[in-house]
Amino acid sequence: MTTTTGAGLKDRTVVVVGGGSGIGLAVAREALARGAEVVLAGRSRERLARALGTLGAGARARAVAADVRQEDEVMRLFREVPAADHVVATAVVPAYQPIAAFDLEAARAVVDSKLLGALLLAKHGAPRLRPGGSLTFTTGIAADRPMPRGAMIAAVNGALAAFVRAAALELAPLRVNALSPGWVDTEIWDAVAGDGKAATFAAMAERLPARRIGRPEDVAHAAAFLMENGFTTGSVLRVDGGHPLV
Ligand SMILES: NC(=O)c1ccc[n+]([C@@H]2O[C@H](COP(=O)([O-])OP(=O)(O)OC[C@H]3O[C@@H](n4cnc5c(N)ncnc54)[C@H](OP(=O)(O)O)[C@@H]3O)[C@@H](O)[C@H]2O)c1
Image 1 (spheres, rainbow, N blue to C red):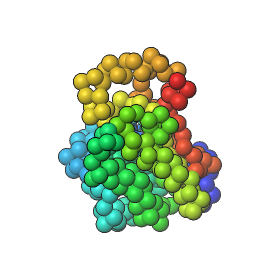
Image 2: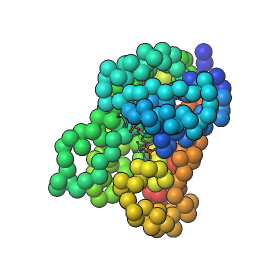
Image 3: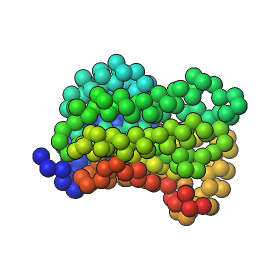
Image 4: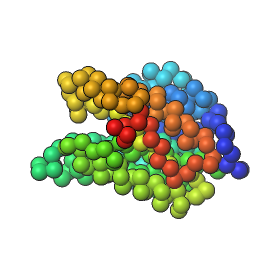
């Protein structure tokens, strides 16, 4: 089958790793709205069940519990989903700590979930994807505009962008891209900003050219573009309200 631009997602199978919340859940919702079937993956069965409940998509959505850091669990995920069209990964085990006191296990968890997780999804997912398929990973604004305590997220986002370019070349004609969100209002911020979240967001919204903080749906819309556009590969698509400009 030729990879065509605008092939759409109708009757495609989209696996969303990290689909239990935030951006991943919005990607699942967007894919369903475009006629796809979705498989949500994440570590917590409870979170996945809650997410399925909010989607209300019946048999068109299901969940598989899997930790993307564990190779056997990624293999099991693709045994349970033996054929798919697109994989979108948003999973991260975040860690925000000062370099002087960075806990090594926490640092490794960031690398294992986001960077080695991408490797495992490419290794075991790519052979399962139908012609015209794609892999989409999630980097982030921290690669270019890091925050204090965010050194490992910055490093992993930068490395993931390099991985995407290499994988796009090696796995072609399968397409491999990344989303790079700016500040998006999800629960990941509860740990970073805590009670100061509203004030932090208000101050950033004022600075951003888009004059607002991102919504998960903004990034989901871009994910759909990367899945549907057959001529886009090796790209890192920024969805950040113009954050690098300020
Ligand atoms: N929100 C932002 O402002 C922002 C900005 C830039 C980049 N990003 C990036 O966007 C991505 C999504 O972030 P988000 O804001 O949507 O956060 P989120 O709501 O915390 O979503 C992360 C999801 O990944 C799952 N997950 C975590 N570790 C996993 C693992 N080891 N295996 C499988 N699933 C795992 C989590 O579920 P379980 O805990 O149940 O596994 C959760 O559903 C992340 O890569 C983040 O770095 C976000």
